Image (tube, rainbow, N blue to C red):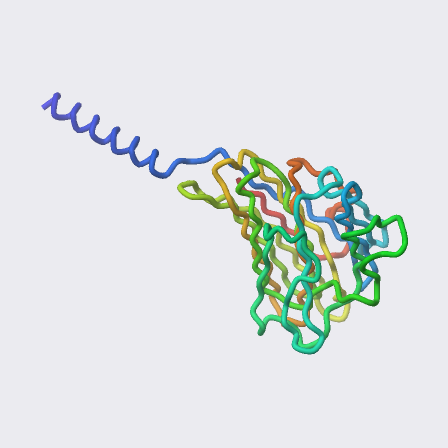
Length: 269
């Protein structure tokens, strides 16, 4: 009986080992590093992905200036989207051309009004030198929509930072990022914000940074932006990928804002 018991334990142990080898637990980690408000009440803000000067600046709800750098100032990839002013079809108006980042949104989740023109966007020129390649009030740089799905290819990266530019007006907004790969468990990180409702509700734009490390077994980050309201209240701009794992600290974070309402941040490994 003892021999049979030992043999049974051995069989069980081998099954566990085989099962673990078929579905290994990776050391990969995905975390929400920060969420910073960069525009409030349709205030103009700046986004640059120009090499060596990749950064953002704007004004938050408290009226304070906020600035930050994307990674080390030179990004790996980017894509910014808006909607056609006539057909309202969603498409990228600026990307790095590598196919690393792709966004999609159902036509029914896009507002039947033109995109918003709040952001100055520099992609092919130095933001400190005139003329800007995307000027405020001319190009429609912020999508009026919700339920946006995006994929970021990280197959050849072991660590880095994915930035998502998103927001809305009133109600609950949510941004969930999932890092996935063949044969390994998904890693999930989330940012969720309850915006002020009623007449006090104004437009907000945020920059969220998701840091991933030990990601050799992972090949994709998929994120989903949702707005718990009408499509016309959703705001989305795009995403940026950098191969720097630890981003520069933001000048101010959402935790410094007053009166924004309930702010919840979830960090998951």
